[in-house]
Image (tube, rainbow, N blue to C red; front, side, top):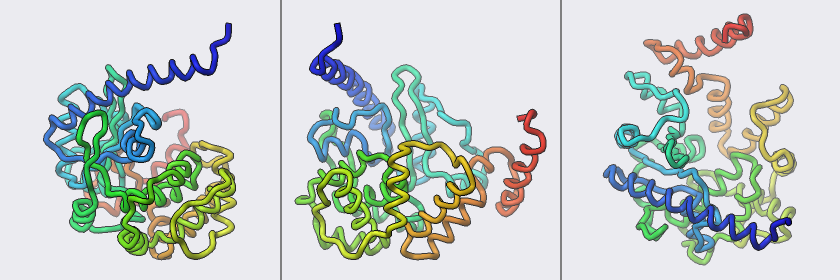
Length: 320
């Protein structure tokens, strides 16, 4: 006999509750580290918007630790307590590690017993929230609060900064996951300090993300976003976002045209064109894994190494 929809929902709920126990244990381990962290998206957002941590239940925890020295301490603590790196990109030597941290965004670790993943972020989005380290830490310090998640007092972003971050994150990835729009539609805007929210939008040149998200929300869900906004959405951005949503997940770029459209989308992503060119420079420049692959004494040498290694792979594909 086929399971009923009700039985399926009950099984999903039981599974989610079991995973929450594992997440609760991960919170306790993070607390034992003595390192202050901010929970991003996921289960914290589910609690804040839907008052139900199982609504966005996931085995992935995204946390922000804005102080890089504390990132290193937390990573060491978790490794000593049974967690394992997902990738082998991390760099221990200086100054290479500092260069790596400048280029990468997060360090994912997994608990092999529970399957829980923790992504330790040290930036929200380096190109959109483009601030020197001390200013970024000050921004976070001034824009956090605490909420109850799984009977734990957990530090999260303030509603105003979190909402700016959600718009920026969705726009950066062309809204290819519709659940990001769903979260924004249902976000408790009555809790938003509107002057503070608008000030943060302007500070990070993010005001144009609102009409674009509103256009997509109306198209897919028949309802807009209940926030004041100005301007019209860029037609190319809307078209590109619909293509990405239709594809849902595309790993890499199947052809040159797709890569150029990706760059073109990011050109419109940034109101300040200096940021657009900075993004382009980073896209075709050094990657974090280049720092991991070889130890070079000077940063500029990695620009040459990336294209040397690419040429070497093309000429010797069987040696990879």
